[in-house]
Image 1: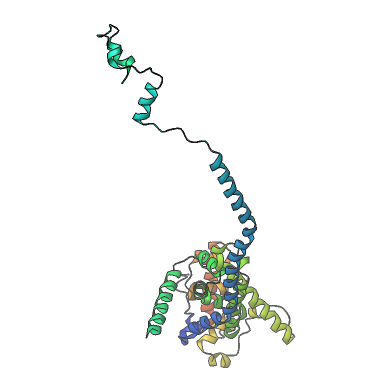
Image 2: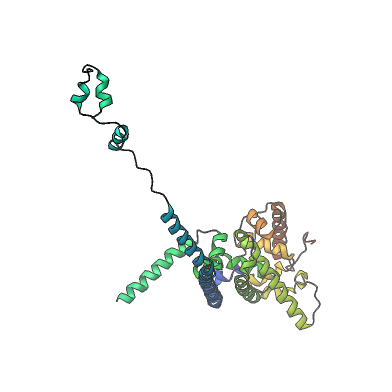
Length: 123
Length: 208
C-alpha cells in the first residue's frame, strides 16, 4: 500500500489552521509567563560575574602585590648589562693595554720600513 | 521624535537579532537561554510550540489540555534547563517533558473522576452513526486518532502535520528510523480506514 496515498489531511488538528493568530498568542503567553524566570537567570548571570571577581579579589590582590615587590627587587639587584657592541668600543678594547708612543720615536729605532711598527705603535 | 527613532532602532535591532538567532542550533539557543536571553528562548518557543502541542494532543486527545500542557512545559523546561545535558538534543528532552506532563494531567483527571488508570485513549469506542455525522472533521480526526497508540499518534502528527522527517522524529523520540516508518504506515492506514468506515472506526492492525 502506498504510504503517501494513505495520507490523511490533518490540518484541522492544528489550531493555527482555523485561527491564524493562535500561535502568535500562544508564543506571547509563554513569553509573558517566562519573564520572571528569564529575569532571574539574567540577574544570576550578572551576579555570577561579580561573584567571580569578588572571590578572586582575596587571592589576586596579595598575589599582585607580591609579584610587584619581586619585580622591584629583581630590578634593583640586577647587574648592569654588558656594553653592547659598537665599533668604538672594539677599537678601545684593542688599544687598551698598548704603550702609546709617537710615531717618530718608533720609527727612530731603525725599523722605519717595518710595517709592523704601525700596528704595534697603534694610532 | 528622538524617542521615536530610538524605539524604531531598537525594534529593528531586535528583528535582526531574532532573525539571526533563528539560524542558531538548539544548543546555542539553550546556552543563551540559560543566561536569561529572552530572544533566544523565544526562538526555542517558536521552534517547538507546534511539536509540543502535537505531542500533548497525542496523549490527551483534547486540544485545550494540549495547549495548556505545551504552554506549561515551556516554563518547566526553562526552570530545569540545567538538566538538559545534551543541549543540541533540546527537542527530544522538551518533548519528553510535554509527554510526561500530559500523562500526569490525564492521571489526575482520571483520579478526580474516579476512573481506572487504564488508557482510555485506546478505547476506540466509536459513536453511533448519528453522533458521528454531527462531528466536524476535526472531531472525527481526534476520534479516529484515539484508536491509535500514543507513539503512533505522535509519529503521525509530527510527520504529517509538523513536517518533520523520519530521521528527525527518530532522533527526537529516540527510536530507529525503521520503527518510525512502520508506525507512520500503520497510523495512516488506521486513520484512513477509520474515516472511510461506516462506523467511523474499523480496527486495522493496531495491535499495540
